[in-house]
Image (tube, rainbow, N blue to C red):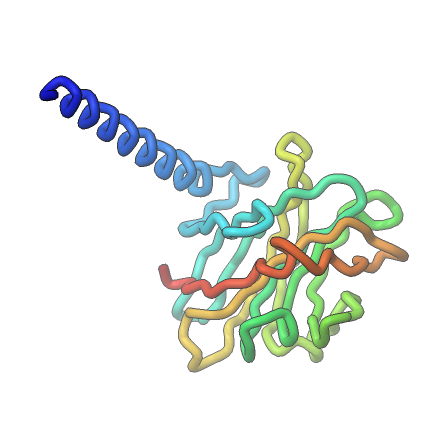
Length: 197
């Protein structure tokens, strides 16, 4: 009986150690990612849907956040990430989107998700509720993912905690992203993030 308890305790300790090492590996995988130009980000979050990751540097003095959004993408699809300064869902989000354009190179730009069927067209600076600059994208072919970079000026007086959304779609038509799936993880890819943490 004592041997059985000892074996149970040993197995339990091994399971706890394995879970702890998995958590550390996931965390370090996020934090230790090497960007092509050796950009450095002080914080990162493995997002709970669509296999995406958000890396960021928050500057309280200027109330800005520099982000690198990584998401799996192959073929002719698109990826997007954005902040919703007025709500908790898709509508109202100021986003950055990236995809392979008709000429084969990656295209990245800011857009406004103003409905459940947004145009996904490039937004002029005057149409953005949050100024978004330094938008670019690159492909990590080995990891089969796209990385989108941007700097977002957060709204004054609203702190550092915001609702954000991220997305990926399977096709682009006429250099405009087509609608994403409306089930599963694609409709659950929303959350709240505090950039000061």
